[in-house]
Amino acid sequence: MEEYKHTATDRQAVAPVSVGKSGLSASPRTDVQPEGILHDCHKHLSSLASKRELKGSKRRRYARALLTRWYLLERLVNELSDSALPVVNTTWLSSGISDPQSRWETLSNLASGSPTDTPIPSILAAPVGYGLHRVNGSAFKLLAELLETVQVPRSQALAADLGNYLEASCGVPYTDVFENHRAVAGAVTCGLLYDIKRTPINSENRMFRRLADLLDVCDLLSLERTETLLRHVEEYLDDGWYRRARRLLKTSAADTATMPSVSKCVARLECADGSTTAAIEACQAALVLSPESSTLHTAIATPLAIQRRYREAAEHLQEVVRLEPDAAHVSVDSERLQSLNDTLSCSHLPGQMPEIMPDGMERDAGRFHPLKLSLACYLFRKHGTLLIKDVFDQSLIEACRVQFMQRYADYFGKRNHRDALQIGSRRFQIGVSLDGAFNDPGFYGNPYVLQIMHELIGRKVIIGSTVCATSLPGSRDQHMHKDHRALFTQDADDPPMDIPPVAVTTMIPLVPLDEQVGTTIVKKGSHRLSRKQSAELGEQVPLVSTGSCFLMDLALSHKGQGNKTDSVRPIINMVYQQHWFADNKNFKLHPPLHVPAEEYDKIPGRYKSLFSWADQPFARVNC
Image (cartoon, rainbow, N blue to C red; front, side):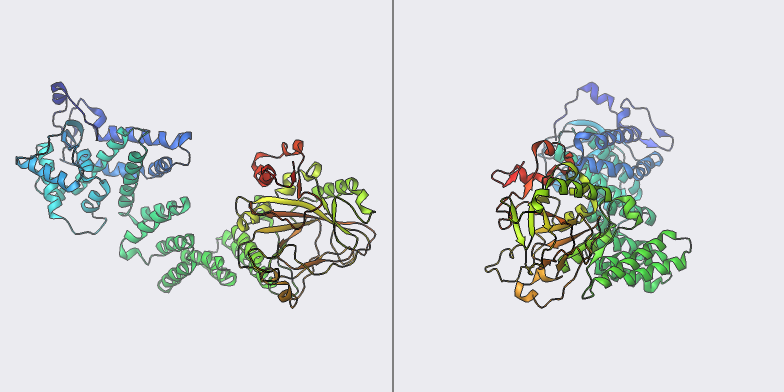
């Protein structure tokens, strides 16, 4: 602690001041009165919470949390006005002693008049609690013994030391500090606030420790009322502070453990930590005691849904509707769970293609509900393929079709092309330039598709290639194949390793895929098997309308059907992949990605990261 030197005049200006029922006596230092400290510290925290340069920092996060709990601190500090405990006086501090126990011994010696080798510290005008807080090193530790919210054995040694300190610093006999423990706790809190106010903003570590200590104090004060405790636990869960939420629940009184509202918080916490089984068990135990609690029925539905036990979750929500007929939103959630259960059940049928489609509310929001997103990712990981229905704008797909048919008409009559890869009878893979209608965020950054890619591959997902698999009239069926051999294996026929998706092909038809024009036959589950093992699997035939698409893992077995019509069948293959992966098999005649420089500049900034591969040296990408 830095040394403060005062003149004799300063010492006279900080004469002992006490607080009685009549209020504070006159003092030349109003900034160290409880009201002044509360006001100044609140102003300081408001400044920290609003500073743009502190956005996302720990200090800003703590400051915002403290402001929502400020009423607890005001309630405790304001109790000093009804206490006989002195608040402001000359406070003895030892800046040269770091060990808390040595500090207490030094203060006891000073109080009893015993000799001490420790240099007498400087005199500082501050609340008595400032000295208590600084000597002990933590206001929370002191309040944990002073307040009755935490049942801990009272330390007689601590009581004696506190009494000696108060008598030495205030000049007032104070033999049993625990008789007026809330007054002492308020003084300590006031001292911590004073310390925060005085801490320079550039003292990162010191400021963080003080803010964390003050938030610990708020947690301690919230234990006095169950409703306050639960509100703060909910806030911590909303903000992602799971450690603090768990600590609050663990230190709450034992008789609140079976309360429905507490069990609901426990369930949320366990779900946030990924322990859905523990969350279900906690709710089930509480339901035995409170079977008619709508809170518990609501709470258990979430972990059940996360485990894809949709039918059970829907039954609990239906019970909520029975108990609370006005809970209309619960009825909507119950219908969503029934729909998810039907989707899951159908996906397991042998000839059925796993599929999802956004509902009305999801279309309004422009993204899938978290439960549907979780199910979509589960289905893709399990089957290696997924049909996503009606997520692209029909007019955009039509514009892309018209542009493709006009620009690449020369490819439709020739058999061989130098810059197009032949992938079967009258079937070519043509590199598509990302310009015109194709240079549209609704095409390469479709919110529903991109939401799934972020979950499957990660936030650093990139577009590795954009080509068009073009089947001319009269083309025949392909042979069953995989677009790429299994990664990290010794032999091409080795079964793929059980790893997260590395590359996902999004197949976007520019014309409707039906029995005549043909489609791409897939074998769900083959992405986890070798080619030989996949031969025994059944086939699925996705019939896809324009505006829809289907996903394929790079290791999925599939084959294109022949085209029995007189028109071209163009299907855009857009591959989303890990940024470190490069497909060196399928791009020998043309680059995987073609983005003209002038078109790259038109891409919105939020989507430019999708094309970051184009900026890497030696990448076979035109940009």
